[in-house]
Image (tube, rainbow, N blue to C red; front, side, top):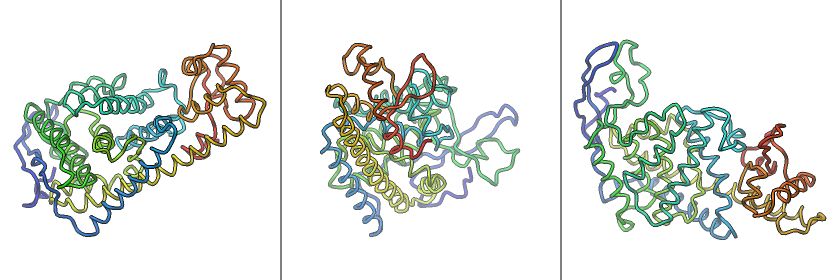
Length: 400
């Protein structure tokens, strides 16, 4: 990390760290420890306040649309899988969106897909915790991190708040001979009890009402910066940090249903995203980061709402196909709703959800296939999976 980049406006301190590189021997350097967040908003330019206001309006429109739906939770899982794919791609774990949307969550075909799907499980765990009225705790975040890395190459790193030092990225101008800590783009807070205390302070800050002092969008930006800068875990910080954006907006009642997908926008601008975070640490440039963050929330809310309305239109069209057919059973319409909310499924899942016999579930699936509403995935005879192609097209475009 280039220590010369940290100026007098930096909202934190550089602290000495040292250790031993297995190849290059002992090293000494500094890590950046951010100051605790203030109870007041940072000074922002008028154009940044406008960006914040636009984000609030877009989030309100998204939430209003979700609340008007007969069953807004129906669209949660498709949104989560889309978010899982993008947030994992930001961290270097890539799986094609079509694969993510149609994957068997119980038997993913490779480790990367398992890692992506774990995000959706983790997110549901977090949403259930908040919806049950519980507060944000260090223990909760540790549980989320364990869920995220379960069954992946990083499973051994599920140790709670880290005790050791980690580094983030690598400077393009760094010499190949430099120890990793010197060559790193950023060196976050040292691990241990102090890091745990600072993470707890952040969660306490997020749990303290201050709407009269800090706009919720600004508060979400500040909290996101603080979490990413503390970098409290040995793996998964980026994905957990972006999930916390949605969790925090849910906790602040800005969102009533956590369908917001933020990572596609940030993934498309990953270099600027990392630059804006780093500029806060080096120069205290809160204004540029908050404006960038607010623009991301606005665009993400607009995109999510557009996709939500498109899914509702598809749902209505599929119901009309059923009504125009010889099928009269209510279970056929229930299967349409299930297919909209679950981008791939088995007959056993239909049997369990619709509470019908296996034979009846299988017959319903076959009938909707005949109508062109459903289609089989793959050609295997065991654990056959099905999908609604019109739903996949809304979520991921033409998958043919």
